[in-house]
Image 1 (cartoon, one colour):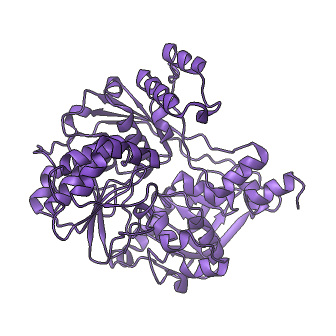
Image 2 (cartoon, one colour; image 1 turned 90 degrees about the horizontal axis):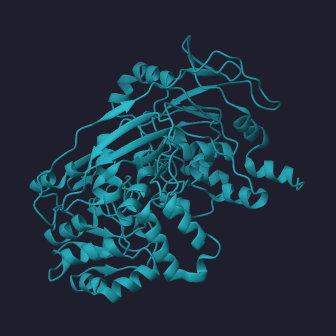
Image 3 (cartoon, one colour; image 1 turned 135 degrees about the horizontal axis):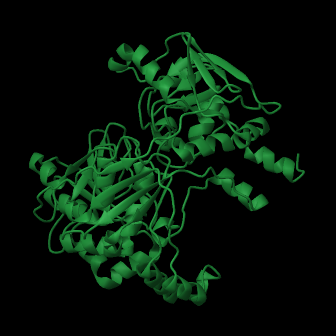
Length: 520
């Protein structure tokens, strides 16, 4: 969300946080940057949520994976802070590491408003001098900044869309899906991404004077106590309750699978949250769609997915210019003392692309402190309930593309480590997952050519729907030469540098920090 303020927001989980507090330092691999150039203005009925839903659906082949997305172009000035927050928040679901808008007059006005509201509570975060400097010389990209790719989007072509079910990579226009009258059981106006005052007021205008349809439950939770107070003062909160909405406490809840109102088996939900991964908001046997607050409210009244206004269902064209990334080199890498020069293990193929952290370590365990043995028994349960019984210590897990996407829970890495998996190889990783893995001393490497070949070799089992495929043969990894060998064929992967090697040798950043502070 910090990206809306011209800042770089990147996930920090508990191990990272402890290391930062202890040392004041933070390691970070500089990612490539993809520029998204926005043109024109949004039409009536289209929102910032529709912009990011459209981008997730149009560019769903890894175009921004692990990149920082920079929004630019004349269309930026037409987007208010609320739209920018929705867009930057969901760049993570799109696959990016972060998304940001360069600071401009809209940014400065927002910060002045927050300063007026919070006063001294802001402390030394920024001063009047900062705001004056940003007004005259707002932080901007360097004139010669290099980009790995450029996406062009005409905001005037964006219409209300929904993501799903169960993925942000698939979208349909509201004009299209409402013809199918997809019945819903639950609707949600909750979470950080779209439960701010502007969102609640927009939904309240749709709900005012109407009633939630029979058989539908509409849940509402403000993003904060301040937002709920302001919504009550504006009348929006009362309009929603009069329509039959069920209030929940402000903050996190159903979005992360906690509290009241979760999706039950066989139910369909529509939500203004940022994630609709299978099982995240309740049962794995339920389905979930994402949409703007207005569409969620209109759907709650209709009883099926629908928009508040007629829409032509316009879908922007793909406009992508992408540069080729350099291939891995042939150099021999120095191996640190204590780091394994080679690893050989039985292949365990998990072929699903975009396997999210809920699938690897489900919501039912994320907020409970389990032992490593307990974690090993439930790992991958939300993806393949039989995974733990099929696998053994020393196995090499091979995943698909964008492995570990989604939330920043580090148990998705430590649970596989607890199971005894030697390492994970994938076509690509969520950068957050990769960071969590190395922070816990768990090696992961990207080798897309190997993943492609394995999927070819094991296509029959994959097509039969097997979630975990174990062919019975082994894979050999040579870290010094950055090669993986399978069935006599050798594949190269990017060399592991000194930072990830040192983290593995130390057994994770916690041990590294303890040694640095003389606590061992």
